[in-house]
Image 1 (cartoon, rainbow, N blue to C red):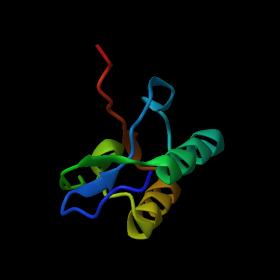
Image 2 (image 1 turned 135 degrees about the vertical axis):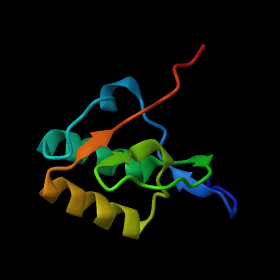
Image 3 (image 1 turned 135 degrees about the horizontal axis):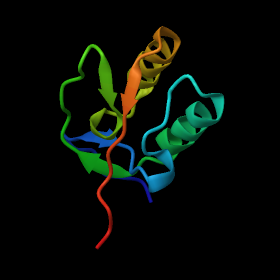
Image 4 (image 1 turned 90 degrees about the vertical axis):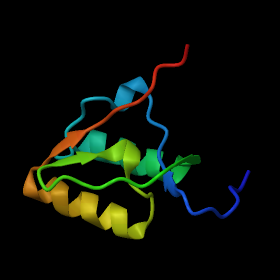
Length: 86
């Protein structure tokens, strides 16, 4: 299913396996890229801290992936948050 265009940013729907990961870890980075490819959840865009990245609230586009790659190489901390289904 292709999402309809919207002013909201496209973000990743994170599962518990991606919580608390480290961008420097190759397996985690592969999981993030896979989640990015599978992203179908819409959320409003929020700002990005210079020291921490809240993956859930980033727009999932090529620019974001490039920024995550830069953060990964810079050793930045990656903050992951996801709502637990009731």
